[in-house]
Image (tube, rainbow, N blue to C red; front, side):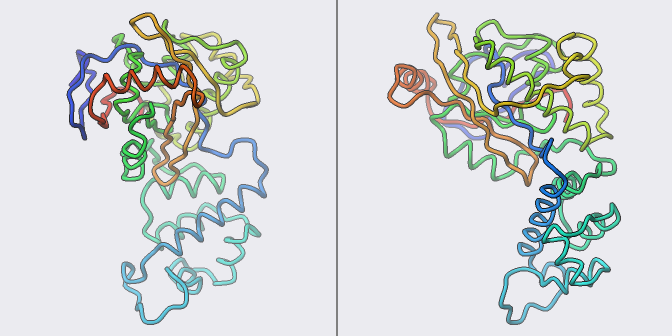
Length: 325
């Protein structure tokens, strides 16, 4: 456990122990997981692809259907249509992006396939609807864990749709850029960016401009997909009150020009390392993993390797937050 008061982070996989958390980085290059700004045709094709993927990954036996000999994996379109109360031809048109589903159709497909909450909310978002009673998913699924394990020497964190950190790896901790201030949204990326900026984080004006646009786009998308999440609503209201910049961008959002940016992370020892942030979406859980990488063969790469080695054995650390999600 680290930090004080109600803020805790719990080590969930490790061969080492850690000291106090110091300074949290101003997120670099976070990207909205929703397809904000895409035209309707693209959205329908994405919805259709999602339905087909879910259909093909569903085991017929799990739904009480006979397995027998099948030429293709998963359910047949006819089977999904029967379970959802629609024709196989209509299922085909949906999967090909040639028909716009009603909210009832989305619910029927989700129930027929017994999908989980995150997949249901993703289908709703792609179809242009808000999921009823939707809350921001915050579970660290196996896909996110595998990413954190596989890139143990690369600073990385996983965040939810409301931009709360869910977990970090020990390479991220090696940067020593996260402090606990006592604010209720200590672990929220957007809050720390607009309302409680970090001293040891340096960005160019261009990178900062792109970064701010992405943060606002991420939160606007989250509010549309999870309108029933009262904590998320409270976060937005408080940020609009506390930050004039955020309020201006919320009312007049900038177009997102870039989905990655670089920043210099100033270590407590006085040195710094410049890293580029790149996003890896984890759509099934509606999470995102952000990787921070140096230029290959650079002095920053050597410095980062030294910091990671000093941190000890690789670990995944679950972040305990009190904010939205």
